[in-house]
Every structure is written in structure tokens, then in C-alpha cells.
Image 1: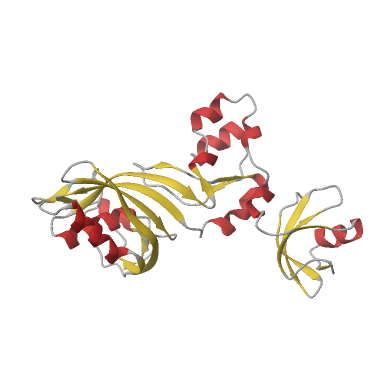
Image 2 (image 1 turned 90 degrees about the horizontal axis):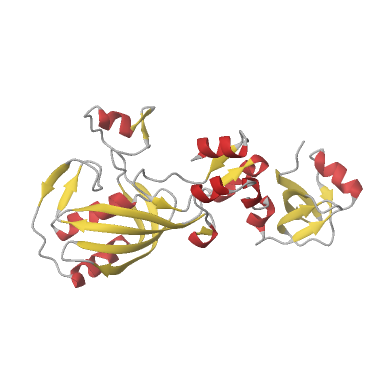
Amino acid sequence: MVAKLRGVLREKRIGHAGTLDPMATGVLPVFVGRATRAVEFFADGGKEYIAGLRLGMTTDTQDSTGTVLTSRPVTVEKTEVEAALNFFTGDIFQIPPMYSAVKKDGKKLYELARKGQEVERSPRPVTVARLELLSQEDSCRYHLRIVCSKGTYVRTLCHDLGELLGCGGVMESLRRTAAAGFSLADAVTLEEVLRQEHPAALLRAVDTGFLRYPGVTISSHAEKAARNGASIPCPEASDGLCRVYSPSGEFLLLGQCAGGRIATVKSFFEV
């Protein structure tokens, strides 16, 4: 997606806030131009997914695209699935799947997995803020809603649920419905981008990602100091993070105010 957008927008500086599995759809926040400097403020944010859980099998990838390892009968009821969700809500530990980009001794796990190798992985802490059963299609298939922290593997969640229920489980589908403060309502498809005569018009101003912080406008003299990296006086600003604008309304930086002075946290003006 980043490669395609580089060509469409004719901009080399493009980044994103969180990868998606190849089979997944949904929200992929993309940052363009000077907005790439903001990725670090969004990449660690919570995410929301709608996942399809299929019980009765396990695979080497923990999703339905992998090689089937086991197949077992499913005798659990919907109430048992709902009860099992409680064991995976809150602060939990996950063992990253072999088919993942996690590195072991400098090599990505999926590179080792493709060679038929399996190595020991350390459990990692993640937070599942919300895990609920949305619907049941049949005795084997369910849809789950997951609100979780960065680094949570929904595939592994489905796998571990299946193991707890005694019949195995895989992720059959995945749609990310929210990430980095953006939802599906904010998203546009690649097809929509390609149809635009001026696709850059779809981009949001970088400061819209920081509207939760108060904005302050500084003087021309202070602007010059800010562009040189110096802290600037701003006695009217409250302590904490703030958006700093030039007299002309240009978004200059995200700043940290303390004791009437603002220090630069991250600058966003073009040099």
C-alpha cells in the first residue's frame, strides 16, 4: 500500500501505523510528507478488530490459510465460548506465532517458519481491553470484537481460545475497524484514491491528529526562535502538550509547556 501511494502521490516520505496480516482488511493509517514525523505518536495506540473464529482445527499459521495440523470435533456450546473469553480479557501474555515479523537472533520468525524451523519464543505482555462475542454462524464459526493494545496477535487469540475449549481454533477472517484514532468511517479505499483527479486532496492536515491538545499562536519573534529549536515564552499556555501555530496559522510543532515556556517535542514545519 505504501509503495502504491508513493507513486500516486509522488511523495517518497510515506509511513504507516501498524501492519495488517495479508488476509486482513480495514483501517491502515498512512502518514504522508511531514506527517511521517507523527507516526511515533500513533503507532502505540489501541486497535479494534472484528475477527472470524473457526473452531475444530489448528494450522501452522494459526489462521485458515495455513497447513492444517489437527482436526477435532466441536462439542462446545455458545455459552462455553462466551465464558472462555473472560480468560483472555485484561493484561495477558501471548507467545508470538512462528509466522510473524518478530525477530529471533536477527531473523524474522516467518523466515524461519518458511524453512520448516520452529524456535522457542518468549511470552509477551499485551492488553485486551474488550473481547466480546458478536454472533454465531454455526456450531464451529463465531465473530468476535477485540479492542486491544499494539502487538496483540488476533490469530494467537483464536488459537489459544480453541486450545482452552479443547477443540482447536483458527482465525478465519480479520477486519481492523479502528487504529491510531481512525475508524472505518474515516477510511477511503485505494480505488477511491485512484479515482481522484487530485488524490492529495483526501489527506488530512497533520495537526488534526493532535486536536486533543490545546492550540496556541505565537508571535513572529517566537516563531523564529521555535524554528531554530529554542524554547519559547508563552505565559498564557497551560502546562502540558500543546499545538503551536505561527501568526499566519501554520502548524509549527507539538510542544511541551512548563512554567510559561514551550519546548519542542516534535516539529512539523518544512525546512
